[in-house]
Image (cartoon, helix red, strand yellow):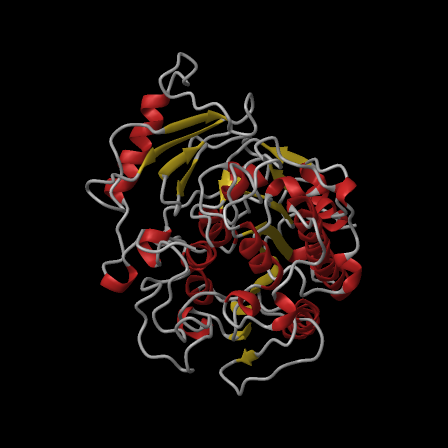
Length: 483
């Protein structure tokens, strides 16, 4: 069990930022799922603060990860989707190292700012950002060269020759994280570790058998906005993509062309997703154990979250990109020195907020181009909530636009179809009370149930849209591409 330690007055805390892929908040035990096994997420949450509403500011892989590293909104540092210009087109393969230029993430990043404050920095695990890690501030890095393969993966370490370790990538990465922590214990320099896990993102079938068989249909909790009686559009192809990713949709390998059994449906798919979530939890447990065993835990802040969630059939939709909770709401918990324990916070926290929070912990100044909230006053118990208790969500879904998420409401304005994306419409398009209506079934726009401050919330979107710069590159036009 992690213990709570006071913030050291003489040492900057080590920081470990753990991000898995495509994990929605409701598929975890500490957020109320009755059957899933995620004891290490619960362990971390009890040792620190769990944010009831954790938000992905742009719920798609590449922009979410870009904003986490840059500390900027996706429109300022990335694409609006998973478009990559320098990667091997259509194959999801990193470009030749070293790659010239830095069109992507052009401003000083979180790891670069921490380096200036005396930290050594590392990135281990899934990357999915176009620039190589060394270009944006990482001293040491081990990343997969190919997107979305849990086995037979190829890695690059610090620009060396590609290599393919035996077994599963998640297990290899966990081992290398353990080795890195041993090195840092011997070194004594404060470190920032950005540790990424690919699961539970597809390919769901590319995982150890024990996780594939861990959950039955009876363990699945079907969301109230999922209609199992209606097939999802292009259901078979979408399910096969979830099961095998590019090995189906690009390579059409023979073993990927059929569903596992007759009648395979969304419930079966979700059971596999749950299994990979427990796989992630086991890897998180290894990290926490390694921190304890090396003696680093007493001066290490650990954050666990995800880049975004997954619709998994809500409104007949798969994937992510929406401003609704299934896509944009993620687990978010933190423990470490100076963080109060066993606390559930009503403060809305987002991926964007961790850059200024980490820099505050490190005693560094946050650059003016990083607009997130410093959460340290909430984490140390000085305040229950900040004055700014909301987060902005840039949706990549064609039918949506930009939303503001408060502890209770999500209010969004659509993209302006006449002016073209990424321009947004003046009028509010959707507003949901996520407490009274947790499945976002009743749009409050035009009813007397709109929140009393809805105009203020709409103005927040206007102010964001006017004040937030866009990355002015034709290839990276924000809003052009989708996941």
